[in-house]
Length: 112
Length: 112
Image 1 (cartoon, each protein chain N blue to C red):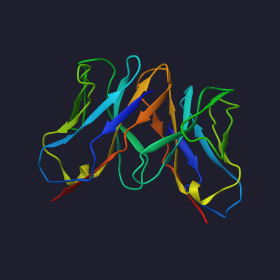
Image 2: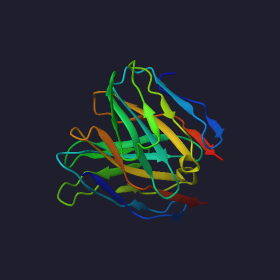
Image 3: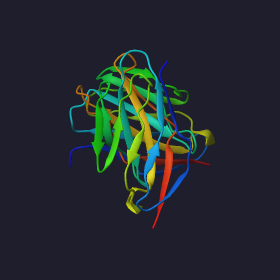
Image 4: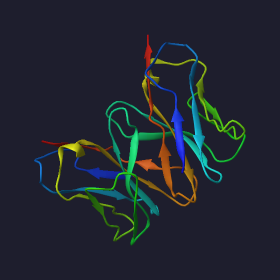
């Protein structure tokens, strides 16, 4: 079956620090990959996506590259802000499963 | 505004009571899903639907029922509430494109 393994949290960074949150996956077929963000008290919002190998998804300064050879989709941001404090979820979709499979989430706290 | 609407936002039930969590989307999405979110466990799929009249079980379906009589609505029924069902419930929908799921804002359920 499909699975997503995500970097354990929580992660605490100072403002303007570099962020990496690791995500690896196991899937049958050719998954689409997603990062979702959940701000306190809210639902999940799509942050970025990639649908095929070597695609780079980007949004709001965040980036992730679909690496088929390493089955990874690591989230990066060059300079985090306090407003980036949230929980980040890596997820995958396959047409055969017809559902999203989520990682366990990584809590990010950015200190001023 | 277009999106996924969940009601109620908060609910307290007594053990053994039944209730229905409502979910509606106005984007003409085919796929709809229910997830529960528990601390340290990410999001777990309860039930999902790939179209009106079609539903299937996810990872944790016991104690829950769903139906999909229309494209827009996907209610989740708790048959006999138990304290283990205390959680935050999210409904999500997806079209046939590969954009990703849109999530509702969640229902926080407490069973006492």
